[in-house]
Image: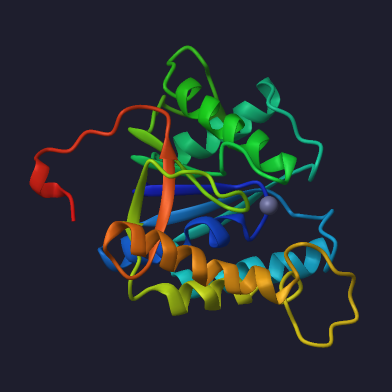
Length: 238
Ligand SMILES: [Zn+2]
């Protein structure tokens, strides 16, 4: 199955937190989108891997993505080496996306920067014909996405561009709240972490409003990119 956009996250919920609004918008424009989670988030302070699997599936339904897979790498300890790169390359060649979205280039959780570089490196390597991969006995063909965009999650990284997600924020928050084990719930008996505070939940709305304020729209999500962005004409900007 070929997809237009493939979004990777080190943990289930990274994609929702970083770029759910953009995914919802692209799907509304007719694009096909898939999500690949690198780990099951088994080291998360709250919940369990099994609970997070269910939450990820519920969030995927809300977003309307065509596919969601989990590579079951080790939360906290996966590395950017040949073995892990080949796992990502297999996904890129399987779904042949034009655009890849992945974690922030730098963040509080060490898996985010690691996942960011791992996916970005694999996107390059996936285009090299002499790297052979097979899935179910079938040889895959080389595929390099046109571009890799990094979403922004915990740290306030300066974006290279923003996507207008006005009209999609309610559904974005619904997809995030599908991870009910992870975020703020009044009177929870589970341990606190930086993402379980009410402040964090409110900051998601605040950030999209603030990025929108700075770019002349109501709500926006920001991205960074490793190469220059080109537009066909100056009129392409909103
Ligand atoms: Zn994460």
